[in-house]
Length: 151
Image (cartoon, rainbow, N blue to C red; front, side):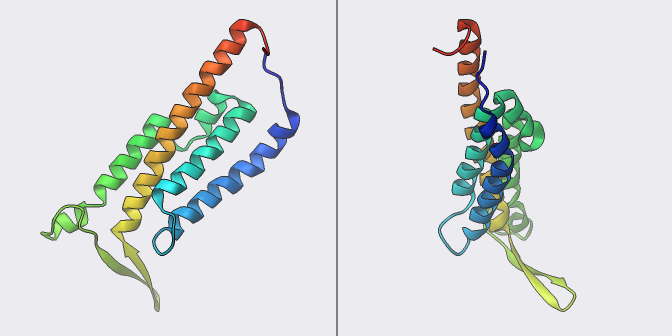
């Protein structure tokens, strides 16, 4: 039987949100400063591990975007792969990045396929590492259940 930590369960909800928001900040910051998709994905995976320790690996798996680490990682690979298509359509080499601007009223919002590639890396790293960590934690939960409690 798993020993409950009520304090961890209560704190993990808001902390999960803070960690995921911090990972998004690291993702977006990575274009001009240290950070980016890989480091942001690592931070996001730590949020999933926190949730798994507090509420169980099954609950953490369900809380992932797309509900599965495999689907999340696959979506990340697809997004990163699609980031090379705009340049390819323009006759440039695949994964040559494109920069442009989107007119929003009087302002121009700068866009690039670099951010799309980083987002794909972010999702892939989050899904792959969270899946690996959750699988290991699930093994520990299964072992604990068969042994009948804490060692």
